[in-house]
Length: 572
Ligand SMILES: [Zn+2]
Image 1 (spheres, rainbow, N blue to C red):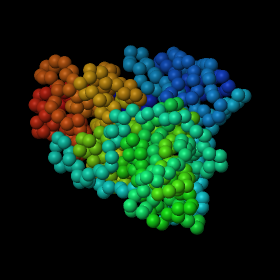
Image 2 (image 1 turned 135 degrees about the vertical axis):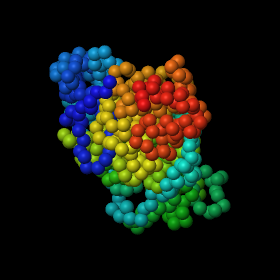
Image 3 (image 1 turned 120 degrees about the vertical axis):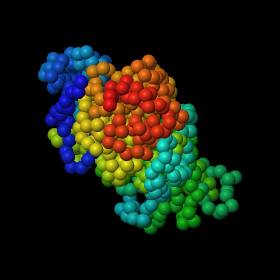
Image 4 (image 1 turned 60 degrees about the vertical axis):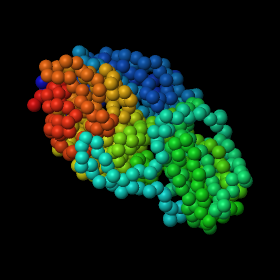
């Protein structure tokens, strides 16, 4: 049975240019009012069927409240006051809903992320910019932009894969392995010291994120003098992601510059390695008696996480005085906690780099000639990825340099992996499947092209986050659905994006979904990247157009492949 697609006003998108947008949730809207010790949640069911709604705090929420359930008739509005705990200073109300319609499985509903300014007597809503971005400070002198080179070496686009099943895309990527960082238990660092009094925390280009916290004083190790005669500056860059929890700032860029007569001179740069360590041999231009500025930028060959204000990657910085031939700055940490400098950034970066690593180690070049630009947080101010009613949403814009925009409530690994998959798709094909782009939700049918593009992007998130492909049940955050057991009430056929995602998954997995009239459904992709290569290496417009290719690749007999498609409601 095919259900007609329906579009409700709030999620119809502006049509200036093609964009692949994040799936939209059911139309059960949620709004809040905040007061000290109290939260008032207004839920409005705009659907034509009753809904049970579970409301709970989101992962980035610093406001806590007990989860609660509300039943709403079609069209009904309910106002629910609950007790809530809010700290002082910069706070954020993150709120997630799970919606269950009669006889259907629960699906993720609308989510909110609302920064707050709070003290003992009052709580007020502020913008993300007021809460976080405005804390960045401009870099002086004003000529800072001139002559500064970020220093990253963007690789050219590699040739497209011609062969199947495993795309061997040329162009080696010479970065260290971020896989190592995911395998390393980052040690808990000593307690953060307060920033030195009067310190100015500035960024490379015009702005800075933050008060940045120096952990150790610079120390001199005179026994490590190098015979180049050049000075060396080194340190360790880590990200504070939660109370007591740190990750290395692997593959961030470190730039060292110096203010010489009112002009910034670049002295050297490097990537942070997977353990957080970095070391820069300073140019002979360094003036040893003046302090240098060290800048940590969240950008590498694959991804650049950028500010909507200036389109530049976020940067943290600190000043240091050189004290000998080798200055070891010790550990420095950027505060990416929920009340820190930029909540959500650590999650997005981790999600992006997990995808990067998986592609890289499966011989699929994840990089293009410039990194994928991810603008975070998206807001009404950017004018990008906006609904027709003027609300900001998340999407990937088309084009070689199409940017990804993410709203704060989408600061999740699944979302950035989904949107990057769209970007990578466009990069390999120079287009998206015919009929893709625009508003969609997970359970409806649209065009086969939209379902193919979105199904692939959904699959990529499952593929990246699921380490065991033999599991009988496969779930990831945000999507909610068990991709091995989609509910029967989803729209059927290759016009539904979860059905196509499930086909991709069943091609990839080693789990037998049970007897069918013809055959089992396990194919013999020996490479983890096989299915991703199949897709990226072969531009098509609907899922069934891949059947011949799969059969030709010899990974499964025709009957077996057809059986796999049929199990996912795709008949032909
Ligand atoms: Zn999408």
